[in-house]
Image (cartoon, rainbow, N blue to C red; front, side, top):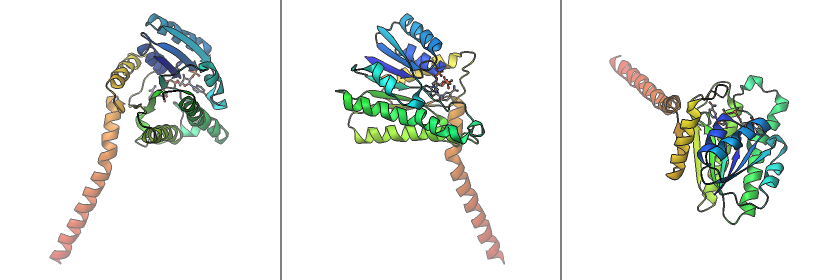
Length: 240
Ligand SMILES: NC(=O)c1ccc[n+]([C@@H]2O[C@H](COP(=O)([O-])OP(=O)(O)OC[C@H]3O[C@@H](n4cnc5c(N)ncnc54)[C@H](OP(=O)(O)O)[C@@H]3O)[C@@H](O)[C@H]2O)c1
């Protein structure tokens, strides 16, 4: 199959590209040409049949990626690109927000809509999302909202198209992108197993599981405390 990887120049994107390389053709997209070249080498070593690179800034739209794909059939789109990745809300100047929305949402919609219209069969999609798309984390509204919106868009596409295959990967751990970490390789292994098993959602990382558990527990605890308070008030009123 032919696999298009957005964000192939990232640690996570490169690990995913390598995991899907054996026996497949890859199109690797990102911005940094040096890191893309390193990803291409790694994919070839991992057994890719072919690997092409496209260096493009998605904040200006998906056109260069669409042109690089040309008329080729993309069977799997892996989206690991994120312009807002690692950014705190306070670091984002208001004038930067439209560029982030373009890079992390609009250009990806443009790309997928092009593939859906141009291809004889829809590509499967693996979205590298975050546990922050589900739980709210202080100071990460821009990042969380963009991940949540991407998930929502793809889930709506799945609901509207029979047979559209989507795996949402919610990363719930910190993967060190500076040092290069074994976690990225483990994540890639978990993703390829989840994809082979036709899973719809993969939650990766123990911290993420705890966060999600606490997030869903919190309204239950709130309800239990409110109920207890009301009961105690009733008991006290009965004594008077
Ligand atoms: N690391 C973690 O702990 C963690 C946790 C949860 C989720 N994730 C997700 O995993 C994915 C990969 O993240 P990472 O941490 O490995 O690396 P990262 O440093 O966040 O890399 C982001 C990737 O997106 C690309 N990108 C950024 N802005 C872009 C733009 N305007 N146009 C096109 N491409 C752009 C980068 O390309 P260049 O490098 O070439 O600029 C890079 O390939 C992201 O979606 C991130 O949200 C990571």
